[in-house]
Length: 169
Image 1 (tube, rainbow, N blue to C red):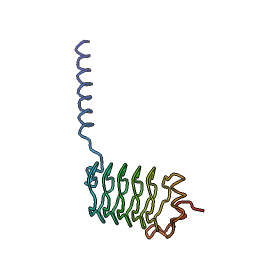
Image 2: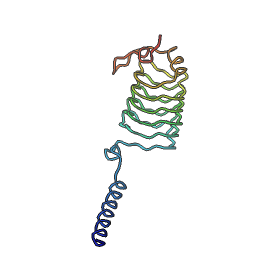
Image 3: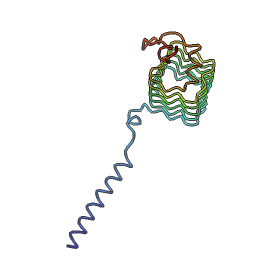
């Protein structure tokens, strides 16, 4: 009986160790695909990321003043506490991205796809939003009111008008 219990505990222990090994060696799928970009606290001012695939990228607290992200794939990217002052994001895909507490002052957001993105507590003052698509994006009411004052154009990829995507009246 005691030998049987020891064998059971040895088997349970071996399974537990195997499970821990599997969990510790697991990597997120986006890391394996080579598309993940980690730029936390990075100094990226005036850098050229145009037309690059940066989907799933992490740009937390990054200084990206004047950066060129035009045409970039930023699907599921994370921008929090960052600075994109005067950056060029024209034609970029930020669908399902998190844009939280980001300065987008005087940023070119022409034809940006923000479908399903979370845009919270960010500054869009004097940003060019012509043709930007905000369909199903989470945007606070005050920001929507401010954006609707200058919303115009139709997104060249999705065919959705900026005013309609924001729910402007």
